Image (tube, rainbow, N blue to C red; front, side):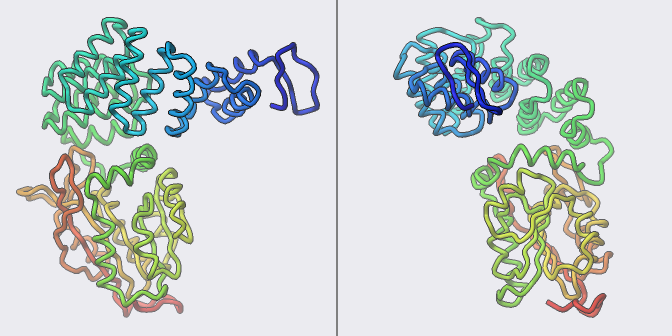
Length: 460
């Protein structure tokens, strides 16, 4: 936008236009609601360049920044609104959302309460219920949801939050009933539904989790999450591995918070793998071609770089790969399913690693063969797997949380059958889940040094 005026629209040069500020704001809001955040932002900022204290524009630009995850900028804009007009109840509610996005829980609670003091709304009550749930005050959260629903009986977020408050208090039947109701009210494809399944699995209620998933499947028959977790929770036929669509969708949605979430879970797999690499390889001198399979956000990258003449990462999630690129350690990042990727790179790598990625594979034979083909003679593959729960005498299970767990001997045999020399799996603690250690296997496998397949192959 080149110009905006307080008067009627005028002519302009090709590719430019001018219009009244009110019309420009209306147009920007239309673009905003249609999902074109970039153009809406440009127009909002152009308006503010001419009228810096335009409250409605400060407010909608703050909402846009919040939607983008730019919480600090959103907070600054919302504060300008409430300072200019302390009676703007909606802006107080929006400020609470932005503060909560920065985990400023107490300040967010005060903003929501101020909004409610001005005008009681279902939206502010529903948001305040989230604060109480975050604090562990589930009974108070439940009451806040009921306040919201008294004002708007079909409020989707309040109904959703009520389901979580009840499930968190182990009011299972009541919580499931509210969850089923919320699923009818929420917009299609909203991922909030996943939380019901997670709560029910923590409560050791897989039958109720299946009930939620079947109701969800009626709404979205082809949803990858639903199909995968129905198989995991129902005990039906186990797929050989998680589908590409499931993995891609899950990790695209997880990318922005992946590192911080895993830090809270005391995630150790990348460092366990790196220690094993150090033990298996000579001192680092940037001498090897290395592949990081399922590289995610690139946590392994800096740990591998000292050995890497070439460091390649592959992953199914574009959002994860974007995060990995920010580490500036990979020479190449590829969006690919790892088995297919390896098959396309015969005899290409001296070192391959995979930290917690094979947790999404049940059958390991094809992966093992692909690794054998992609490693040069003497090449090393270091990887982790999740271990079967204590007392489980099987070889592989798809557990209710959606990951596969393996017996160590089963994994060792699968890679040995593919022609690799496999060390005995070592038990390790990969991370915590619901404050319980998750046990796993660290496995080191080597392609025999004598099996040269091309002139460039060499032994590690």
